[in-house]
Structures are given as structure tokens and as C-alpha cells.
Image (cartoon, rainbow, N blue to C red; front, side, top):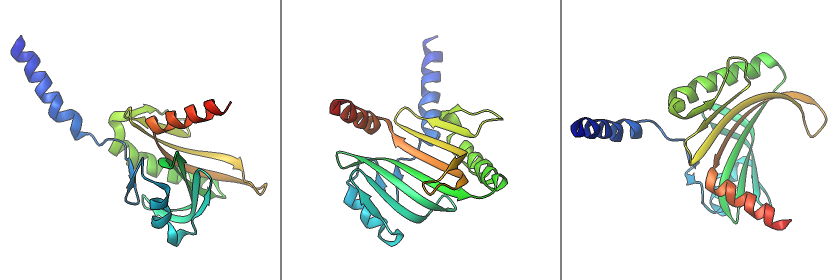
Amino acid sequence: MRRYVLLILSIMAFVIPAYSQIQNKFFGYMFGSRMYHMEDAMKDNMCTRQTDDLTALNVDFGGLTWDYVEMGYVNDKFCDIRFHKIFLQKDSASGFFLHLKEKLDSKYSYYKILSSCNSKAVLYDDSKNVCMLTYEYSESKGGNIFWYLNLYYWNLNLDNERMSKYDNEL
């Protein structure tokens, strides 16, 4: 019996690390990096800074050029990244959603925690980082309505730190 348990534990030690964990490094910088690092990485993408956020335009990532990307920071530590692509037609948005979902499923299937055949969202969580892909019909800041494809990554510890910071402001 003891041999059997040791065999199972040994197999798990080799199999579990074989699954890709959720990505935590973007454009050369990991979650926790300082804001000026990402500002430098995004200098060719019209990067703008607003307190705890950076925004960049026309950023290439994952085989797509995203219309805009937002990077969030807490206490000058990189904690999340949000990619957004705008579409006029639902078919285009849903087609890209399905294409990216297939890629993410093959990379992170072990960590998938939310998805259904009718869903416009899929979520992956490795208990350190989270990845979420969505598409939605929504109003822009300018008042026009578009289809948005959104890809989010965030670090859970840094996100909790941000929430604590906001709670302490109250």
C-alpha cells in the first residue's frame, strides 16, 4: 500500500507541473514589476499614465493587434493587464472569441473553472493568477455601441492588496 501511495505521489509530481500555469509575464515584465518598466516597454504604443493605470494603443499580443491595453498597478506594482479589441459585427467578435478560447483551452485546460456552450466568457484560475476571456455588446465612452473582445490577466495576491487599499480609503 505504501508503495502504491508513493507511486501516485511521484506521478503527480511529474504530471501536475507539466500543465502550463497562467501567464504572469507580459512584454518582458512579471506581475509585481514597477510601472516605469512597462512604460518603457510600451513607448512605441502611445502609452499614457493615469495614477495607478497605464494605457497603450494598438498592442500586438497573442496573434492579434488589440485596440487598447490597460495595465493596473497597486503601490507601483504591476497587478493586472486588460486587452480590448473593438468590433462592429457580432460575428467577428464571436469568431475571435472562439479562436482565442480554443488557444487558451489548449494551454490552460487544467485551470478552467467557467465556461458553457452559450457563454460569452471563459475563466482560468491557477490560484496565483487568473485569465478571463469575454466578449460583450456595450456602449463606448463616446456613446457608440460596439462588440468588445476582452482578455484579462491578474495576480490574485496583488488584486487582494489593491482591494485592501481601497477598503482602507473608506
